[in-house]
Image (cartoon, rainbow, N blue to C red):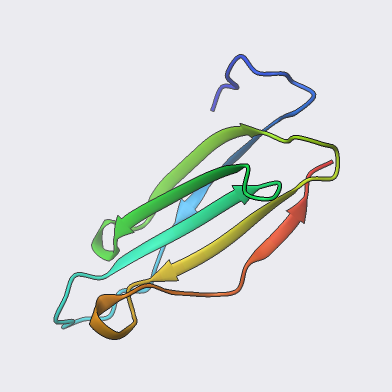
Length: 96
């Protein structure tokens, strides 16, 4: 994952895998989603896949606004009533 032409003092990259447990015999197509936002939602990314498309490789580059900004992650799945998304807790990390 080569870095784009961004300010190297403020740039960071994230690379990983979006994976999910997929129950059998569901009535509707199941989806998973990873939401990512940086520093008070100034930058937002969403990665979505059908459950049967996982695992799915994800990667992105972004910049932080200030030292000590945070990057937050939240995972959801269409496990709610009428196939609506339900989300787990948000996990945040400081970006130095």
